[in-house]
Length: 79
Ligand code: SF4
View (cartoon, rainbow, N blue to C red):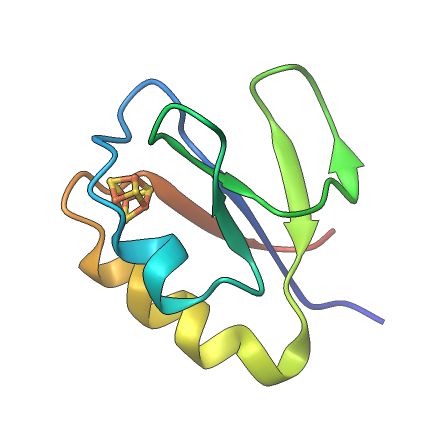
């Protein structure tokens, strides 16, 4: 079964708080204001840690990714 996966670009996130305010089921404050995903399902490297997006939250995650002021929310099809 394929779906979407999401990760944060920690280098460009400006800690605006939007994503974890809006979708706390997927995003959190990692501790210093920078966002992170709440769970790592796929770890490709220290910089690339993905969470599989629950199907019922796909639309919200896509929306908040579009609204992120720095384009730091990366959503891709899962392989
Ligand atoms: S919306 Fe974008 S800039 Fe704001 S906290 Fe989330 S990832 Fe960072």
